[in-house]
Length: 94
Image 1 (tube, one colour):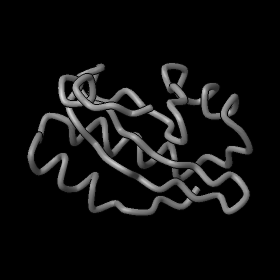
Image 2 (image 1 turned 90 degrees about the vertical axis):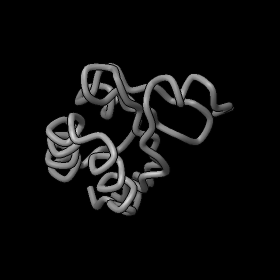
Image 3 (image 1 turned 90 degrees about the horizontal axis):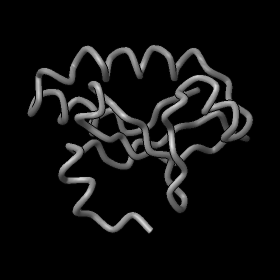
Image 4 (image 1 turned 180 degrees about the horizontal axis):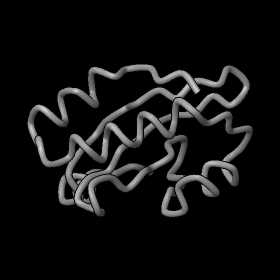
């Protein structure tokens, strides 16, 4: 998969250095994936959830959320936002 908007990831771990290892692992795993559908995403990340058009990934032992839109045909993952769990809970993702 190609990852679009890595800037959001970099900004997140600059703000929260404790997330860097988890975000770096997510990047490595995602780049090596070739998902064709959401069930395949779940096989890789079993805690991933689909919320509207976003796929939500738990990051850093459930302390953060990475919201992305996956275009399976183009093999592209566009990172929408990386936020803390508390920030995610306050946001309306529907």
